[in-house]
Length: 195
Image (cartoon, rainbow, N blue to C red; front, top):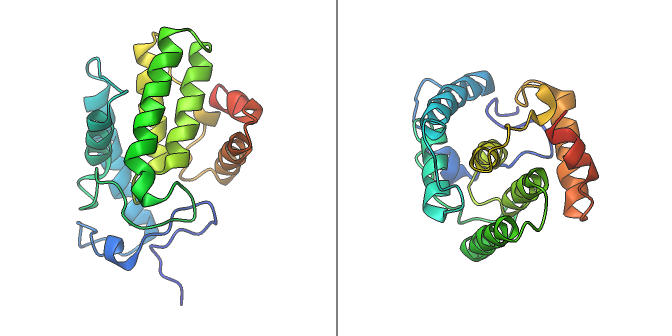
């Protein structure tokens, strides 16, 4: 029998038994209930995050953003993962790679290395690639990217214009775009973020 809380596709990040034990709301037994609880938490975090200017290119801000997005649902929210995943850098490299990314993005902005949209989707891809947290990395990275765009005085990305929780086709395109970017081909991601 499958666990009703487990993700159902191979692009999802599986949680360890210890991480799953850190679920806060005791009423949650179904994936739908978990999705709804996380979405409520994310909406509240979004209101907080976009209420004023934020220093997105700061490790403390990024961990705090994750905590605000998932802290009512998971005890590990805002804490770097300590276990290995089917995606992401080794856990011991998270802080190193994240700080390298933040430095790179600051440099790109300061030196106009890329257009603002390209800076943003490269930032997003690398943040997802690092996969700092036990779960919620895609949602966290999308919000952080939209905050970066705001700081660059650009409109938020449309992210395929679909609900990534329910829209399987949109999610498949998103995952394909990220995998293509893993091979340094950003064309699909560039198209997806403004679609």
